[in-house]
Length: 291
Length: 173
Image (cartoon, rainbow over all chains, first blue to last red; front, side, top):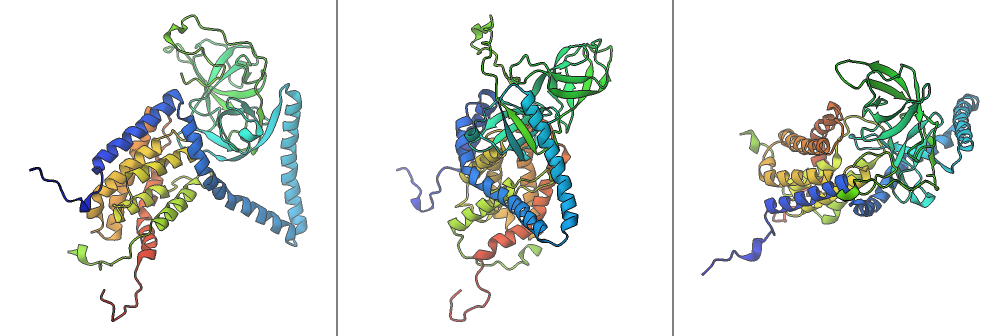
């Protein structure tokens, strides 16, 4: 006769079995998310669940701002305040006006958005803006401020979207040196406010203080937007590539108002690669290099 | 032995609704728009550890996993990274729950520090494998602060379960 334990203290599978199950599930999700990007619908569903929490957690700041605004209009130190607010308004106005000029200069449609907060993931450089799918934002759109390119929309939620800054380690931007038209690809340095011009030959004609602008050949960024300024060049003959460090032109850490540019509609079709027999889809026009 | 100095209180049973409320509050804390505050404690991890230690039969690895998923989606992090770390954290806390409660609050905090650091190291390893950048040593500061918050947090979270201090003479317990 086989012995069965009484069912009074039945607690389901053993903890180690549960741990194994959930760890497998988590690893599967991570691989799907990082390598194949299949988990987006699940992310959207869970994000929808987290959205009320996010909204509520944003409320204290907004409330504080509203209350502060109420009291600044109420207190008797009006002159002092007026002077201060006028100054703040003037600088904000100046920024908006520059953005407006930028908008008029650009041939594409654009949406004005505001940066809500910096992404909380300490492993990447991202910001969250207050426009989402409802306002017609699509992943892959370029984001600029009044000084230059800020980044690219990488993920869109119903009312928010996530912008990966050009300083993120995974972000690449095709650029061109203004002085001589040399094309290159600029990589995010990962650190706060640095960029790196990689795979440029040691003898390439790049000098300190050269201005780099978007080349526009990727179809994402319109040509001629300032991206960065070369700050330091290390040319070592032992290596075939120079180490060129740049500083972004856009205020990747300061600004609040940004412009989201719509993508160009009449792009020529992507050329079909000859060695696509491996089953890889033809390269996308986006500059994010995560193949 | 100093282990037995603390009086062992008889607590009221924990309500599931109350547990859920603490999780929601911890999520709210974590999802606040912190602007680059270094050394921010991960309250969700702390509350998960607390309930795993105090209510190991109600709180489990599955709940911790799901909370991690919400954190991932809310943070825009790699989907599954927090879930992975929290599942390990819950498993370790459930395995150690009989041991931890014998100690005084500050010695419990030492145990919790090790658990939280281990789960954070797991998360760091996952992100470095997936191609993230090393966020610097300030990344670990929050864990130390969270462990230092353990005595306060466990006192506050246990408050609703405490019996009234005024003892009724006619009551058996």
